[in-house]
Image 1 (tube, rainbow, N blue to C red):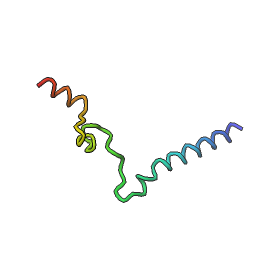
Image 2 (image 1 turned 135 degrees about the vertical axis):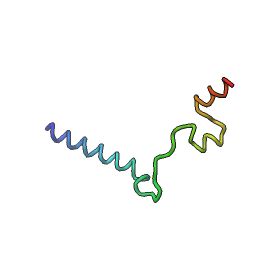
Image 3 (image 1 turned 90 degrees about the horizontal axis):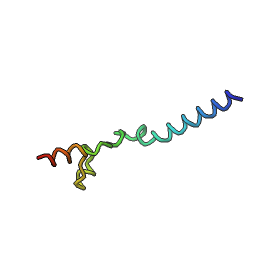
Image 4 (image 1 turned 180 degrees about the horizontal axis):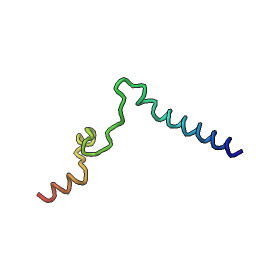
Length: 60
């Protein structure tokens, strides 16, 4: 019984990981989106900066 639950759990986790990575794996230049605020183009276009940059500007 325990091994069945373990294998079922392993299959569900593997399927979830595969489905979450489909966009990255099968796109021609697939890569993870940039999540760091300082290097994110969309955030920069909106004038949003990271806390380190805001702190640096406030100290000037």
